[in-house]
Image 1 (cartoon, rainbow, N blue to C red):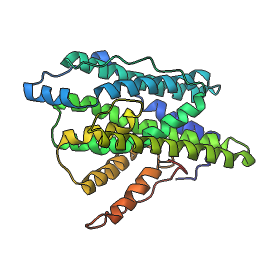
Image 2: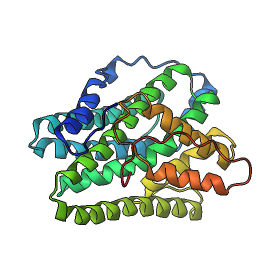
Image 3: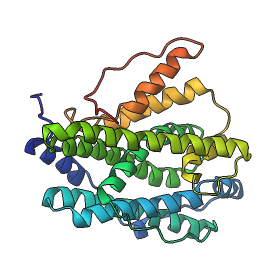
Length: 296
């Protein structure tokens, strides 16, 4: 494939175009939810994610939608607004599932409109790069263990793939935004972006440690950070090596269908490969490298 100049008009058309073309226009109201036996229903209700999932998706939809409304570039505005719509659709799906199966969702305060939409979008995008990487592996374990029946698995398969599209768009948007700045201002953007990435990582570590200390309780402002931790035990026992290996392979599988010239998130996969190299046992096979984002 010919080289792609990051920050060019071609790059913008590529990452916006792939996102708009790959949108699935289904309506949540058309989902046919399956009947569940008592054991499956109990497992579904016991999964400690529903409150946090509903809260996070609603907040994410607002943050992304806000940037879509103020973005002046028509092509970027279309793609960003579409992503906000998809996140809002995730919120609706979770609420419909809860209503269908009698899952009680706690009342949540309305999310705040971000005062800095660009920063909010950047933080959200890199946060999703972290969360989705581990969610991909957890979802694969849930599918392999038949934790959910097929009718529910297929719904969340769609959501997982939409999240893969979201993180791919986010890292390309960030790289495009950097390239659009004058050369002398790019180092400042890199520092600003790096600070936001570190803040997202630190927040998740803080939340995970807090949940470990509090015995799994996920209340409070850092609850999103422990989202994956809260879910992991519900799918049974599995080794750290197996889990991290699945996260890597699922991350690559979900991003593979899209144009190879698009940048991929690399920060979390690179760190996980290093961790795997330190764990006992045989080393993981090193997959071929895709184009990378400086801070994804």
